[in-house]
Every structure is written in structure tokens, then in C-alpha cells.
Length: 440
Image (cartoon, rainbow, N blue to C red; front, side, top):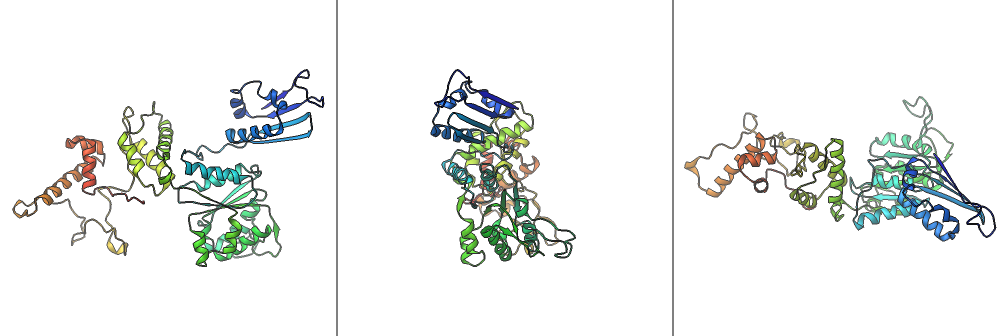
């Protein structure tokens, strides 16, 4: 859809006396938003100085994530074209308000326009791929391909063929020539995830590709010129690997023009509550709930105090699981399960299957190999520690009730005549749910 806005010949004449032309190419998304702005906003465009126009351009880029091109062939004849950038997918939105998070996003936005390699560092689930996509979408290469390759997903013998391509007959099974990821990403961006897993041989060839802009297919002696911007991501300590000789220091120097380190969720103050509400509302809409009840106060405290070793990805799973398991839509969600594998019926793993692990099974198998039974009734004649006997009996009752009600803590508390908080205290007291450490 196109919208052409022309200045009236009788008004806003420029110094040169020529008629000014502002041409906007908008799609339905852009028009929907521009319709909410004052109608005369663009009619005064020609009266603005060049500096103001640049500031407005930057404002629109941030507001709509679009690219604005403008040129001034001569004073008084101004051609302006607005083209909307492809929208980020619904799954790939940046949500957060903490200073640490916004600083990382701002650094990525600033680096996007620079045609230089960028290295993204962060724990699992912090959004490294989202940053790579932002670097591409906000760069001059946004209309060209963004090619993604997970370096850890392929065996070492196939990584080089995948990256640089191969000729027919280069190795067993290579029946025809195939272009590599570098050639696929020509004029665009190549995102290399899990960079630290690359073999030394692949690192050497990657260094040449970055240094000289040339790649050579396996089985060929003729280099191919490519114009590719490299964005790499890892959760490894690459400088430490370089000191140990496990990663090429010269390649690290070439890729580290800008290094963006993403903060883990546990240090993003206030973002857990924002993200939980966002993912919860989205899941409620997917389940066609009439309204969003929110989370109970004690659940919000639990979410905020949890260490989130899996960061945003783990938070999303926890929240969506809590929403879909909750049946009473009229009340705030009052239970979340951080570990989906936690269960009173968790299978016992023989000790020889996990050598050296301190997490031994809570009880041993009987001599005949049968699974351990629930604690037997207390032998009143042999009680020599009243507190320990009472605690053991209480644990047995709570554990049995939890199993009976499929680990639904609200129903369990009701059946035992306890409040929800009292039951939670019993669970923590007896270690029925694996405790989470401060550092995840």
C-alpha cells in the first residue's frame, strides 16, 4: 500500500522556489500507526533543518524498528522514502526494564550499523540469538539473508563442509557440489552459535574468511569471494580458552571488535515479574481464558527468589506450565513447579550409573531389587528420639498425601487441614522438594 504526500504549491515553498516532494511507501502496519499521529506532521518536514530530520529518523527507527532512507539531491527537492523493516517474530521480542538488560540492548543497537564482527557472550537462555537478529535487522544488510549455524550441532568432520561447502567427489558421499553457509550468507549476516566448539582446523579456515573475505570449498583450489558480516555467540570463556591453546587468539582478536555480554536473569532487577506476567498473559490467551488472574503474592516471591540457571527460557517454561495446569481461572495462580522432573515416584538410579555424583538416591534398593516402600509405622517400643520419630511420621503423612493428590499442593493442604503456607513449610522442612541453591 502506498501513500503519497505532496506539499501544496502555494505553501511551504523552499528558498530555491522548487516544489518539495515527500514520498512515503508504507504497508498496512505502518499506516495503522501513522494514522494515530497528527495529520500535518509531515507537511512541516521541509521546514526542518537537516539535524532535526536525522533526529526524527532515529526516533522512527526506535519506535517502529524500520529503516528510513532520505537524500537531498538539491535544496528544495527532497525525496523521502519510508520502508518498514520486517517485523520480529512474536516469539522473538525483547522484554525487560532493568538497566543491565537495556544497556546490552542499546549496545547491540549501536553496533548494528557498523559493518564489523560482533561477539555475543551469555549464559544459556539469555537471548544471544535475539541479539544476533537485532544486529542484523538494524543493519544496512537487513534485506539480505541471516544465516544461522549451530557449531555444536554437527560432528567435527562435517563442520568445515557445512561452513565452506564442498565440490562433487570431495569426500565419500559428496555426490554433487554444495555451497556452504558463507556463500549462502553473501551480502548478509552469518550467525555462528556455540563458537567455542569449533575445531582448530575450522577456526583456521574461519580466520582466513574473516581476514580476507575468501572461502575455499573442500575439494577445490579456487577461492570464492564473499561479503559476510560475522556475529558469533558462546557461553564459554574464550580468552581463557585462548590462553590454554584451545581457541585461536588471532581469531578471537578479529571477532571481538564489539563484545556484548548479556546479563543473566538473576541480576536483572524487576524483570522476572515483567517477564512472568508477559508469558503468563500470552499462555492464558492461548488457552482462551476470559481474563488473566495473575500470580499469588507467594508465587511472585518464589519466582523472584529463584536463581534461574536457565534464564529467560527456563522462566518461560515454568510460567507457561503453571498457567496451563491451573484450573481455577477466577483465582490468582498459587502454585509453580520449578523442576518438572521432581516427583515422589522419581525412578531410582543405581549408583553405578552415576559415578562420583553426590546426588545419590535417597533410599537404597532392597536386597531382592524391589523398590523401597514407604516408611513403616513407628515402633513405639523402640522410640529413643521423640523429635526424630515425630518428624519421620509427619514426613510420611505429607509425602503420602502429596502422592495421592498428584503433587497438587493446594488440594493436599486442604485434605490435611493445613494452609498452603503451612504445607509449603512442611515440604521444605522435610526436603520433599529439591532445594534450589543461591547460585543455581
